[in-house]
Amino acid sequence: MYLLYSLLLTVGFLALLPWFAIDAFRTRKYITGLRQRLGNLPAIALDGRRVIWLHCVSVGETEAARPLVRALLDKYPSYRLVISTTTVTGQRIARDAFGRDAAAVFYFPIDWAWTVRRVLRTLQPAAVLIMETELWPHLFRECHRRAIPVALINGRISVKSFGRYQMIRPFIRRVLANLSVALMQSDQDARRILELGMPDELVLMPGNLKFDSAESSNDDPAAGDLRQRFGFDQSARLIVAASTHAPEEQVVIDAFKQIKLAQPDCRARLLIAPRHPERFGEVAALLKASGLTWSRRSAAARAEDRACDVVLLDTIGELRAAYPLADVAFVGGSIATHGGHNILEPGARGVCVITGAHMHNFAAVTKAMLDENAIVQLPNVSASAAPAELANALNQLLSDDSLRRDIGQRALEVCNRNLGATERTLQLLATLLETSGVESIPFPALSATAAK
Image (cartoon, rainbow, N blue to C red; front, side):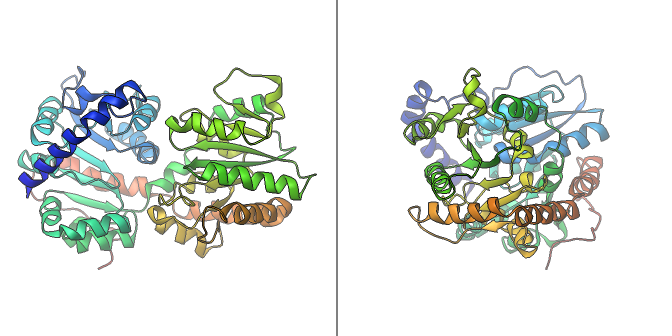
């Protein structure tokens, strides 16, 4: 099975070479860091210290890792921390967040045995920590052969991934046999990895790190800059449309226009933050055609910025700073069928959150919020019907201060009740690091362990 996996990975890589070549001339989204993806890391000053390798796929995982990174650096100053990402946006966020403290921030190698071996020879890590969702067969096997413990951190297995893994369950069982421990976000995630063959005693549930990372975002100096430049001073209600995908920007724009048409005296403004930087120009074109007044964050400041209808947040890493300014936040990837994005960051600020129906990547968090009436979730409707649904929800929230604030306060309470996953995770990682090189690691039981 490993040979077949390698062949499929190679065929896929070769098939995508023409696309990579086109990308090199256009967005450079995937061609960037190709040498590192092939295992050629830059010179890293490790100073003879042991290494912890943390892998975060993209933006969401990198943001979730913030409190864990700080805790690791505080608790293990004698170790060097290196951080890898897969995506370009994840790389930018990681360099900005961790560049001064990590020994290196680099692109994750393609999961061939030879590329993985090359990276392991360079780093010689004491432990490898994988954030959230990715199972890498060759990396796990090569680490197991070298007695390097590998931990899945804040583990999550979506319905879609679970279905795919079940189709190759014997192979996944072999992959999981090389994993030292799986620290899962929720009971549901724990049950899924148990069904796939992870041993019971190695599946633990310290909680969801994203509650802690959301809480840690409360003081962002960029918030003041956004407030001053764009005049976000509470004289008008601010709607933040966060992490949007096509066609959600058009849905949000149409809903906003319906609000202004239905309530001519309603003082509302809109900030749109597309999920992917390569779509900034596309969204700018939508705004240009909308008839609304708008400004780009990346453009030079103008006097008109303080009164425009819409701000396009076409920068990376500033969305967290926009949430403290918001009255309502629509979190994207949820009308579009992408499984949703992080609702905890606005929730931890007491902001009233709206999502679409498609939140399967955050199912446990969404359920926790819905159980407490702490978010507003739209019904599953077509893209053509979505603007009216969103406009109705926004109209109700913007016209009822008490309702909007109560929902936001309940979201804040849910976030506060679920803090502490970082400390519990760190306790388990202490076991992992202290027994590095030992084949069988005795993990202590937690009060919240995986449901059998």
